[in-house]
Image 1 (cartoon, rainbow, N blue to C red):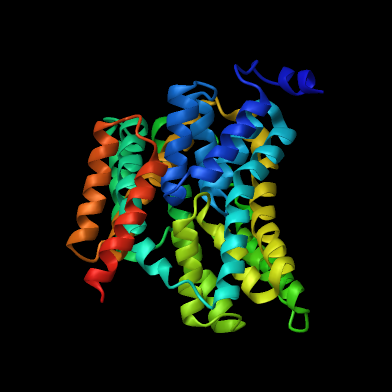
Image 2 (cartoon, rainbow, N blue to C red):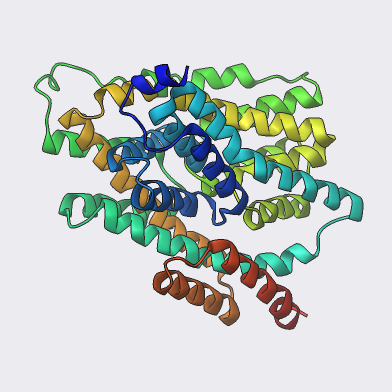
Length: 394
């Protein structure tokens, strides 16, 4: 069966098991949210191990940004698909998500058992600052590698970075427009004055969203439908999904109060893996273990389907000049939004001199010591937070 899968594309230099183990490790030790995680994948799988080509990575990043759902999880699923198709995408996606899911389950149990997690404020004080340093270096590396000296891509990059800072959100339509602009600039199709862009899938999204409305559903059904909608209709990273979750979890359904929701976001930030795994913590607080499992499954299933269904077309047409230009445009826009997200997150996490120092020290260490493991920095930042926070906020 493995040979059949591999025969579809070039023979990989790694086994599926090796990729699964890598994703398990990344899901266990990969701190910093989607910005850092996509950077780790590029560094480890493209630059260091050379398991994935630069072109395949860029295709995956473009597809992940085009589709709704958690960015890093979608990219991981696509990279699993590259050589091992649906089996690889499925197993890699599970391996990437499952470690952080078990962690938030344990934290959810402790939160309920001991009546809150006061120590989270101190830990997040340090870790949140270190994360800014980590994602700043990741954004820098992605920028150098993918934008380079291309003036057109730099213009798109700076525009998206600026808009992300101003709006504090990621505007999905601009990613598509950026891709189309570079496509028409570099390799304009002969038929563009006759044809129409095939955006039916996007224009139909609001219609499909009506399927999720259900006033009389049971609690678990409500959880499933709400988080499925979050996974299917929220574009971008954890930065984009947090306000959507707040609107449903706190305002609409009133499952959690303000403090509980803030604690849930803190859990997402101090645990490795994708930021949206916080839904497991939220689901646990609302309906115990069944709620956690349903919330996590509901939010990741749409992103899985929206990755593997269009993936064959990305693979088939990915080398066409127009598609290459389209992908370059989206990639520049994506990385620009990532750079903007660093600034937005920094404004929220760097609140005093100690946090600024932690972020700067983190960035310098990662810049100078290329092989320094990020978990070591996170552990050090957590300890610093536990020591400094009580002194700064008695």
